[in-house]
Length: 266
Image (cartoon, rainbow, N blue to C red; front, side, top):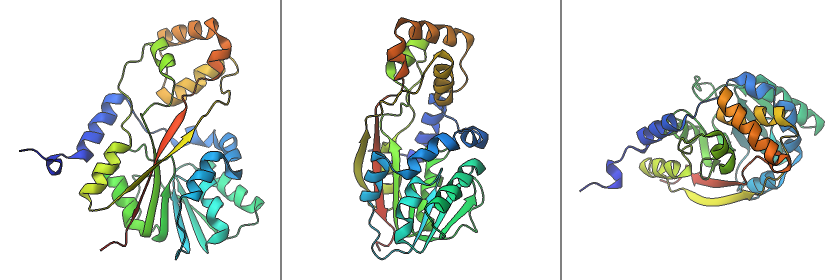
């Protein structure tokens, strides 16, 4: 008889990621988006919901992995003694420090690292968070890293459904790859690690126009899906021309799995 204990969910995740065409973007891709994403460091419904779900009791330090411009880290920094923001994009870390200075915060430290770098000198903290930064090459390794740096609790979010772009856009350009692997792998890997994860959801109806013209649409879709072929661009242009107003709202509504666990349970 085969049971869940016989399934290597870490391997299945890696195979699923490869089949979906998922890949890590170079840090330069995020450097160029630091300014636009920095607006969320001042708060958003998603950030408010994430922070509201965090238990800070008994905690003085936090490590924010994939911190970006600091939306989560800065949201809780006034209630903690020290906050560390880890990211592989120097542009994002620069934005983190700028946003911290604008708030008069002096307890925020940047750490330039990727998921695959050596973390031996990354400080262990009471809390570890990874907000919308868990599309990684090796999920089992990433979860072990988060768990190993958390003295008390871990909080992360993972996209439900594995699609950043609307289904009709994918159909229009002819992309038929499977969706990216989502949070179900995380739950099963944590179970194998002996953790007891809690699951909740954060829903964000993201209807902000992101494609003001055809070139902006090309850039937005290629950022999520990778470089578009000439044929895909031609089909996307036809889709855009049929209804430019529809095309401006190219993002799919987002639902994020909010997963947390305690690391102090015997």
